[in-house]
Amino acid sequence: MTGGHAVWWCHIAVFISYFAVKIEVLTIFPELFRDFSASSLIGKAVERGIISLRVNDIRQFAALPHHNVDDSPYGGGAGMVMKPEPLASAIDDAKSRLTNAHRVLLSPSGKRFSQSKALELSQRPEIILVCGRYEGVDQRVIDLCIDEEISIGDYVLMGGELPAMVLIEASVRLIDTVIGNSDSLTHESFNPSEYGPLLEAPQYTRPPEFRGMKIPEVLLSGNHQKIAAWRREQALLRTKERRPDLCCAGKECDGKKV
Ligand SMILES: C[S@@+](CC[C@H](N)C(=O)[O-])C[C@H]1O[C@@H](n2cnc3c(N)ncnc32)[C@H](O)[C@@H]1O
Image (cartoon, rainbow, N blue to C red; front, side, top):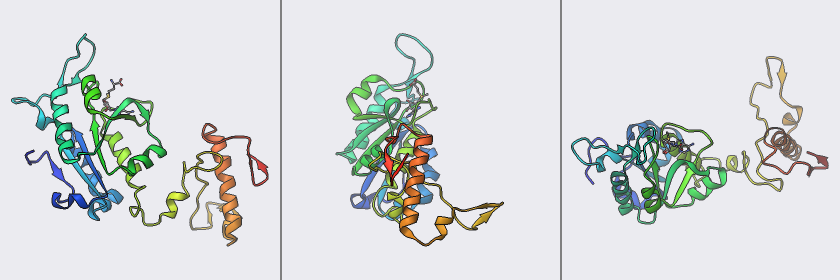
């Protein structure tokens, strides 16, 4: 595959075998990933060689003279559909480098993304993320070249690029060593408990009083057991109130019904 402005690497390919997780994104808007892959913890993970992130332009695989990647739908209807040939060639090309890659299409018709799916993806060594545009992708490419379709929620975006970034962020932050303090991963929303996944308890930082509002007394007590019990109770109450679908409401927590 040729280089050029549309294909770029976040790290030097020579070192690719060293990376824990190799991700390739296929999109017709590669420029959307430029800042994303160079900033914050994702940028650091790339810099530190924990992940490699390659973004390829699907248009490079489309025929001259216009590099068209879309065509009108058979049977009529609104909008355009992504043509099979360029997309399948782009996936084949990515697969030639990542031979064991799990191929994911971002799609509103996919299975809803979740923290447990993020964990599963974070343990895969190679992932190809395919971003749809227009009214979607020719079904034959999905049947032939895609292992799994994932949706980030019940709404329709203009393209799969933001969903791909969501998957990357949620998964990469779960890779060992990406987040400095791994404790913050075990004490956050959606981690499993005997009540099911829970939301996180409220958090506070200095000052102890802000616009007349004081922080809960227990957090100043220095008693770690009491603080842990308070956080647990708050997490349960909050989950029951905001996301009763997540936790087993009615169970007892430290002697209290939640
Ligand atoms: C405008 S959407 C196509 C929507 C499609 N016509 C439908 O009704 O399901 C274009 C692309 O954006 C991406 N996309 C949009 N919403 C998404 C979501 N909720 N989750 C994942 N990908 C999404 C998909 O890649 C999709 O192919």
